[in-house]
Every structure is written in structure tokens, then in C-alpha cells.
Length: 401
Image (cartoon, rainbow, N blue to C red; front, side, top):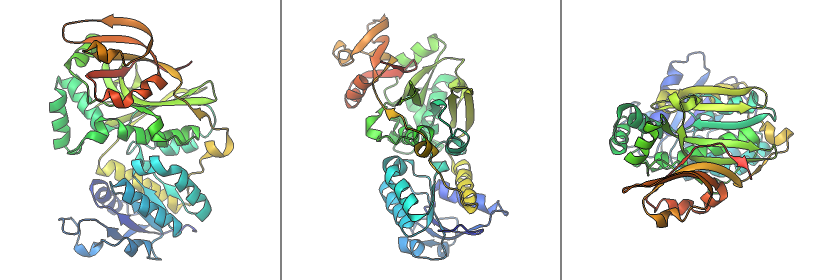
């Protein structure tokens, strides 16, 4: 499909981000883009626009020859996949913000993009207003990238900020995040690390050129955090942050993980607070570079969607340069990492196959160890960890076995 100086948009979803995009467009008079129709799931819901602006049938948008750009901003990953795939197969370019859908279907969608001459843009899917994907694709379009480390989920970061800065309990901080709209009524995706994982899969694709199945990656959230772990971190002058990390190893392989990290005061992400995101990109010659901004919310994410709309107006599409011009590294879990493990029962500790232990503490209530473990062994017990009375945090950078 050829690009146009005018974008006629078919919008799917009018939630926080969809409405945010609509309002951002009204305040961007130089952007030659109009929303012709908005497809929604619940027509009876009270909305800020007249009923005539909405439809409930996908084909009202997908079958309209005037619509040359589909913007998909719904929460249901399965429905989002159907919409995006159908739109691309019918010759329409797409802007999407659904990170779960993208993380699980990127390989197929890239192939459809190439075969049908359309574009799929999704800068809004990771880190809200921070242009991380575009930078990885364009500025870091060489083979010198060593690592991507970031706080990719604003909800969990808000909770941890309240715990460490205001001495809030985990339960109270979560409730406050829900009241302010930073966390959903069911916060599982955020606090379990799954949301960060989906974003990390996308960033790794643009950073290293290799698409990894989310099920292969070790992911652990903050839902097992308790007062013992908080006190331990504070006594040592540390904070706990939920981080996502991609690390290249020896140039020909890389590892991914999502888990809490004990962060020192000299770490860039130590002072990333509340609903903000922060991403540290490290390269072979340019060392560390830091990107910071709001990771969620209607206006920040709406602005990122608008950036994709404008880019498409100029004919932009992702080239996936790392996949195209370089030998993509292989994904591996065969790396050693240093972790903090808090446990109560010795039988729980025995599930963890430590290679060495640097520090050990025993008390009446809880015990902890700090030691080195192979990430592949940690991945084997990932499902079991959720059933144990334990908390695990990352304290070191992976090293090749």
C-alpha cells in the first residue's frame, strides 16, 4: 500500500489510551490525520463522544477503502491479533499498542508485513512516551549493543516507590495504585512481571534481531515481596526494582530475564520512581545511555501512538535491521546469575540448585542466602516458585558458563 499525505484512521478501542490519542490529535492541528470511525465492544457504555462516532462491527473499518491506517488499542490480545492480521492482509498499515499480542505473534506479523507491502508500527507498546523501539531500530542499528536493562512497568514501580519512599506496605501501595488507575482491578500482569516480559521480547527483537518465545524466558514478579525483604534492602542502602534485562554474551548469544533486582544507589534506575519507566542501553563503545519518561497513561501513550501515525505518514516502517544485516545471536538460559533468596522452610530452599553461596543468614522467622545459580536451573522451577514461601531477587550481571 502506498503512503498518503493524509491518514484516514479506523480506531479500535476507546479506553484510556484510545481516548488519549483522540484528545492528542485534537491538539495537533498540523497532523494530517482524522479518525473516521471508532470500533468499540460495549456500545451502552457512557463515552465523551456522540454515538455516531462509534461502531461495533470490525468490517465497518476493515472493509472501508477510505481507511488507510488501522490503529489498534484494545486490551484483549486474541482479538487484537485478529484485527491486526486482518487489516494487514487487506492491505492496510497498522499501529498497535498491544504488547502481549505482539510478543506472541511477531514472527508471523513481520512476514505478513513483508509479503503485503504494509507497515506495522508499535512504539507505544513498550515504555509509553519513551521512544525506545525507534531508537533501537535506527540509532542503535549496528552490532555493538551489549545490553538493555529497564523498568518497563509503571504499576509495579509505583508500588515499590511507595514501599521504599513512604514506608507503605505492599498491600496498601497496591490499593493506592489501583485507586489512581496505575494498576488494574486484577493487577496480575503487572506485579507478576508478565507485562514487562512482553515488552522485553519486543525490545530484544529490535536490539538483537532474535525473536524469543515468552515461555522460554525466566520471569518473576514482586507479589512475594514481604517486610523481611524490604528491611533487608533498606538496611543495606538498596532499593528493590522490577527489572527486565537483555544481555549479550560473548557476541554470539544473549540472555533475557525479568525479576526483582536489589539496586545500588549508583545504578541509573535507582531514582526512577512512581509510574515512570527508565531504560539503560549499553554498547561496546558508547558505554551506558539512559532514557527516562512516563511509561503509562492516556496522554503519554497516546503521544507515542501519534508518533507512529506521523511516521507512517512519511512512509516509515521497521526494517528489522539486526535480522536483515547481521547474524542474530542465539538465545540462551545457560548463564550464571547471582541472586538473593529469602525462604522460611529448608525444604523450599532445597529446590534451588546453587553453584556457590556467598552469604547466608538464619533466623526464627526467615532465612536468606546470596549465591550464584544457573539461570536454566532457575527457569526449571519457575512455576514451582509461585507455590513456595520464597522471594527471589537478582543482584548481579549474567556471565557465560
